[in-house]
Every structure is written in C-alpha cells, then in structure tokens.
Length: 113
Length: 116
Image (cartoon, rainbow over all chains, first blue to last red; front, side):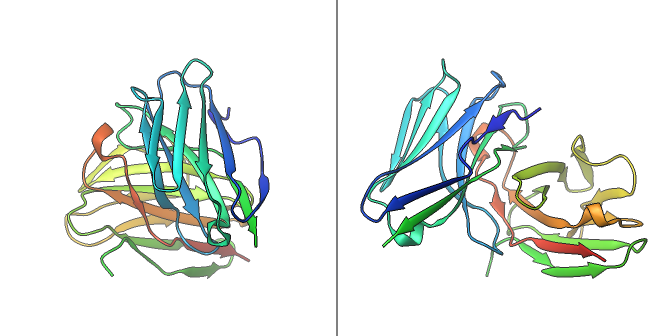
C-alpha cells in the first residue's frame, strides 16, 4: 500500500525551462511534506518542505505547492539547470510520527543543456 | 565533515553471513533513523531510535534484523544470515529532535550491501 506516490519515473526538461515534479498521497494524517534530491551513490539531500497549514513555500528557484483537498503536491524548479539532474523524492510525515518519513518512489529529472 | 557518517560504504557478504552497518549521527543529534532502498525503488523506513531506545521498529523485518543506538558509539543495524534479497542501499538519517519542527533529517551517504 503506497501512501506516497510519484507517478512519473522520469522527466526530461530543457535548460532554462520549468521542471514540475508531482506527488500524490493517500494518508490524510500527513501534515508535513518534504522534497529530497539524490545523486547516484549519495544520500538524499533535503531541498524544501511545506506544512499543511500553507499552500506554497518558496526558496530561490524551488517552490513547493500543496493542494490538501486533492492530496497533491508539486515541486517547481525554475529556471532548470543541468546540475539539477538527479532523482527527486517526495516524502511525508505527521506530527506524531516522530520524524518517520514515508517516501515516494522518486522521479529522475534530466535537464538538457 | 560534521555530517552523518556511515560505514562501510560498500559491504559484500556471502549468503548466511552477518552484516553490520554503522551510523554516526551529526553532532548534537540524538534521533537516528534507518531506511532501506531496494533497486529502482524509493526509501522505506525501517527503524527509529533514540539513545538506548527503539522508538519505532514497524518497518523492520521480524527476523534476522536488529538495530541499536547505545549510549556511547554509533548506531548499528545488524542483519544475520543474509540472503540475496537483503542486497540494497541502507541509509541512516539523524535529526536534533522529534516532532514537526525538526523534520529536516539529514542523511548519510549510505551503505551498499551486496549479498553473493
């Protein structure tokens, strides 16, 4: 039972354009969401997070949008750069989960120069 | 480097042997989490520990797997009598505290276990 799903295993985008990575969840108890970036042979690196009391959080080129009614969140990267090429994981947790994260399966982003 | 340290980075074991994976959390962090990533899949939660306590082991297989985080020293994930299906990347993460305001857990580089 996958509680967090990333339905696109891969995404290819031209440098300078916008990258949009999507994530859906089923557990209505989730109230905090995070995006991690992962390069091969490295651990995930925290990118950006959003609390369920917000619908948008922005940090430089990265913006996360949360639609609670649709149980959907997305990560926007603009403008995309070749160095953004990596696997992006969406993760979710709840206030009583003690930082235990439930991860999606990841989306491999390729930004072409 | 004051990040989360995992060793070894790569570990090869024959079927039936024991695997020991170590994780030293970031300085000041008292919460440790172990995750497993099977090939072409996302990370799956295994166990959450604080010093000398297992808080949540709901993701850990009931047999052959155990974890500890002693008062002194690193956290250890132990897999006894390894099988080929245990081959995966095992990631450790640490955080300063639990709860919503401390959810930016920092991950180590992982240990890649290969069972031959």
